[in-house]
Length: 337
Image (cartoon, rainbow, N blue to C red; front, top):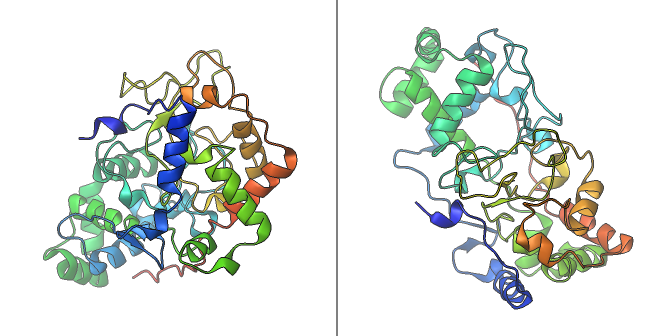
């Protein structure tokens, strides 16, 4: 759909980087950004509704949709951990371990195609269906029959979809809920909307570094704080058999490249990177400020700024700013029928 989603940009010239910073520094002033959330309007598929999202919210927390009756989507995507699970790797219902870290679900609804860390799923629906069946042992039609045997669920499916639950409508309900998860309304967003007191002096200094000297904005582009592209930052490339990442489904992407994660709610979503190998935000910022980990496939953006010297004090300011990207919202788990 968008070739740019499959191949990382090559902003190797300082002049190009300055242009990116200038273009991004006024993000909250653009007409299509909601100044309360600080986020653009989300394009949702035809048929999306609050009723479907509310139904999906219940299903998301319901262990009856797993083969062992002990796992739900929320097992690996917890609201108090930025919709991640706080673990390096999560365990499947089979007992096998995943080999990549559970990513945040915040703002996934803005993604147009290429889901997962490596972009192998073209739609959210395919991503969710695969995760449900592969991770939770979901049996779509059998579990739809179970839900139809629960009067409250049967009524909600009738109201939201005009019929009984099916494997497809369960997936659609999951996706409707995920598309409601928006990480907006942060103190950064309040600052961009005009409240200069929303960020401390240290956080404002961190924002300046983020947009300027440190170069973070080149890939973590506001207001979503991701370019949704693939970059090799060197993580895991020293393994005997490195994870090739996006290069497998998208050969035009560099070996060892992975999708740029959003930095919204990043303070809640440790550990970091596709393999969960970095435990703290401070370590993650330090690694990126050093230009990642050198390897033959390292992204040109990082190579171009490898000579940067970001002091420990400046790194602390960047971390302080990133913590201001934490959504100020509460979440109440649903009561299940």
